[in-house]
Length: 310
Length: 293
Image (tube, rainbow over all chains, first blue to last red; front, side, top):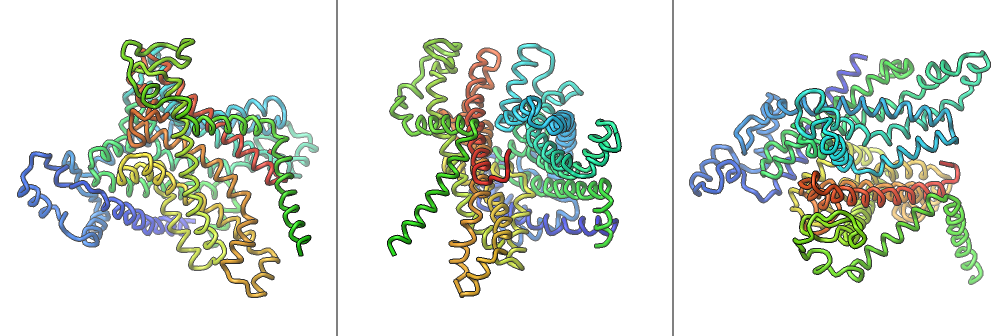
């Protein structure tokens, strides 16, 4: 098992190299001049040229790429052009906020989706099922950031219950977490429902019923335990997209996370930040996906046996 | 000879009739299709229904931020423009971006996935690792980066969205091709020496049509949402173009005074995506009779 985890962690290295290559390559097409971003429009041509020279901006792409990659392994992601801070520090300044929002959103999603999905499966083809499916169907079509605006309208502007922006204290986390969380609800409800339906048709559940076990024990003790794998996979995928993809929610609520900062940096043409942030996000997304695979092993002894064999 | 040809046509017709018969049974899918056709008509004839210069972008400051009324069912915006006309006109942008970006992504993703799934081995390995790399970068971020590199306008937005559609279509095509290639009739086509391209185009891909079509339809909805999101943060279609995401972006400054500005564009996005998903679900049911829901 440990060997498997080590192997997977090592496998992240080529992914990081590939991602950084793609991002580096794309960024090279940007027609903006980093020296102008750093020194402002007032700088003279000599000053700009001096900056380009000292920061190695005149070197060819492969040279810059290799130098950049060498830096990554020392925790050096370059310096922001816009505010001269190390990109590494900027990332870890914003990342805890993003992680906090992602975790809170996953909690919201799980609390809403699992009961809805299980209920819809157990009461298959009844009005309960229809209501649950309709909720998830509407949720799937609702743009996340619009839901965020509606929540601000209701709870911040009209009722004055919760703050609409910022990241101070638990109260300010509620609306962003609901926004992100309900956005993912539809997918998780559907998956919970369908994987529960698969399991509910199995013979061993008929056996459990004929043994006279309580319905509650059958649903939670037998059925749900076996329906967990697709559910955990979906939660993992959602967690990984939340880490980098909560850009819009972060923007709506002025949440000081990684995504919102990246969009700001893009608008300021601060591409050193963009490149560094994408690479760091790729690393964390890979780690989350690895965590999901390890969770499989904890949930299902058959998978654990398979990991140990390899 | 002529008679034989007629039989093949009638078999194909029967298949289409059968799919339509299955599709018609799903009431939700029929309602979705009806509304979608209506939206497409509005999008096509937007220039006939509204005059772009007078109805859509001409400002009437005296009438600004008016709440919904008989004259202005969705109220007016901060420049006194009729929100109903602006949202109606905006249909063409959202539908165009949604359908065009998925079409481009499908046209590129399907051949890559087909080759990957059919050839297998090293080629498959290389293609799938590249696809994995693109999947690791969150797709919305990827789109944002691409738009900011290409420049913000309608065309670049479509290109950026289609690029994030490619990995999805590649995966689904690869998976269905891998199933289809093991069929006996493919084996016999290979045995009589048919070229690989012919086998792929004539025998393998037609059998993978259903999952690709269903996935593409459902993808249109998510592309529309992404496009609106990008316009919301100012990286999509710029104002004064009445794109729905751009309308929402403008509404944020008036969230206290004029909440109708925020309500109706969002509803328009939600209803459009909902009807497209209804059609997608209906197609899934009609094309794959094994799946009931």
